[in-house]
Image (cartoon, rainbow, N blue to C red; front, side):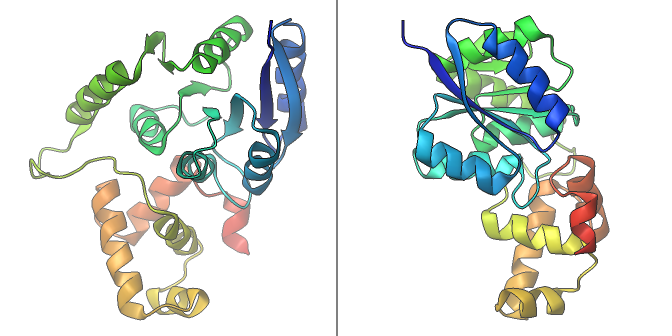
Length: 230
């Protein structure tokens, strides 16, 4: 029987060790490597092509959402299970819109995590206790977006559209307290381009200003507090 190859990416050694101990006890699972950052996650996926990647949302350099989107964009055929301590319905919607195959809290039971891995390795998606195929996931996403949609949003607004890589980069600078002009200088783009991206960010996150956008990013673990002091 072919084993399911996995990687574990989290910058907390004790968490990685605990997960590895669980997975090593399963005959059909094989941990190929471990990583500690978003950059390493992408490198390992590109080199090893694991069937499954367990990736923390809150990673240095590049967060788990960004990693997931890049894996999807490069068609690397690795199913991503995002794990996080930031567990709320909006975060779950963002995770699956970014391309995750499953999303679970870090306090997930060992047996359930193993089941999730096996399901996503077979091409399914796991949302809570539910297992969906692609069509079922789309229906769930549609229902979820409608449930949390703000009353003031227009009917044609595409809620929970993932932030682009550039928008995520700009949002990270916003959490560091940088102005649009400073961000423009740092990225080598025009002030107006930054303003346009900020408008898109506020629209996608359904927040009113830069401060709310920064709080949203921090609350969901998209940006690390230590990163904001660089």
